[in-house]
Image (cartoon, rainbow, N blue to C red; front, top):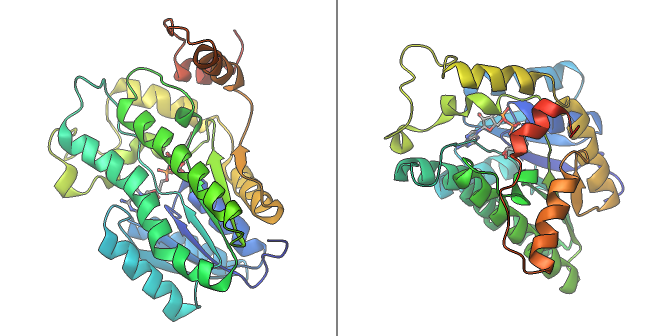
Length: 293
Ligand SMILES: NC(=O)c1ccc[n+]([C@@H]2O[C@H](COP(=O)([O-])OP(=O)(O)OC[C@H]3O[C@@H](n4cnc5c(N)ncnc54)[C@H](O)[C@@H]3O)[C@@H](O)[C@H]2O)c1
C-alpha cells in the first residue's frame, strides 16, 4: 500500500505504547484513525493529540476479548469513516507466572486479549478487504513468539499462536491473490506500559490475579525494577514509524531490532538438528544486558 494518505485505519490497544505510537504515525501519514482501547482517559488523550496535530481520529471503547465489542468497533468505524483499509490487531497484556501456577482465569484473560483479540479483529475486518481486493492487516506478536522463556507460559503461548496465525494468513492472502497485505510485528523491548497490564484485566478474568485495590502501580518490587528497565527501551514512536513503513512496503516480518536474533537462531538450530533443548538464557536477561553476553 504505497499511499496511506486518506486511508481508514483501526488500531486496537491504541491508547498506549506501541498502538499509540502507530496511531500517531498513521495519522501523521494522512490516515483517518479509529483508536480502539479498553481504557477511556488515555484513549481520549490520543484522539485529542492527533486532532491537535491536524489529524483525524475517533476513539472507540473496545474490549478485544469480546466478539460483540469487536463487531461494534467495525460498525463504529464504518459509520464514522467507511470500511477499514488498515487494521492493526495490537492490544495485548503480559500475564506472567509458571505454567504450573497460572490460574485458569489468567490463562483466559491472556489468551482472550492477545490471541482471540487478533482472531476477532481479522474475522471482523477481513471480509470487506477481500470484497474490495485491498487492505493491510498488522498483527502484533513478539520476539516471545519465537522463544520459550520460563515464567512466560501464557504470554509465549499467545505470541507463538499469533505468529502461526499471521503466517498462515499471509500465505492465504498471497496464494489467493487477494490484494490484502499482512505484517507480523515482532517487537523486542519497547518502552510502554505493558508491565502494568493488570490495570486493564476485566472483572470476569480477575480470580487469582493480584489485588489492585490499594495501588495499581505497586505490583511488587520486581515489577518496579522491570518497569524501570522497560522505560529505557525503544521509543514506541519509532515502532509506529516502522509499522507505517512496513505497510507501505508490504513487508511481512517486522522485528523492531536484532537483540534476540542469537536466541532465536539457537532455538531454530535445536529444531533443525532435532536436539533436546538445554537450559536456555531468559529473554529478560537481554533487557538488562542490552544484548552483551
Ligand atoms: N512493550 C514491549 O516490549 C513489547 C514487546 C513485544 C510485544 N509487545 C506487544 O505489543 C502490544 C502492545 O503492548 P504495549 O507494549 O504497547 O503495552 P501497553 O500496555 O502500553 O499498551 C497496550 C494497550 O492495550 C490495551 N488493552 C489491554 N487490554 C485490552 C482489551 N481487552 N481490549 C482493548 N484494549 C486492551 C491497554 O489499555 C493498552 O492501551 C501487545 O500485544 C504486546 O504483547 C510489547
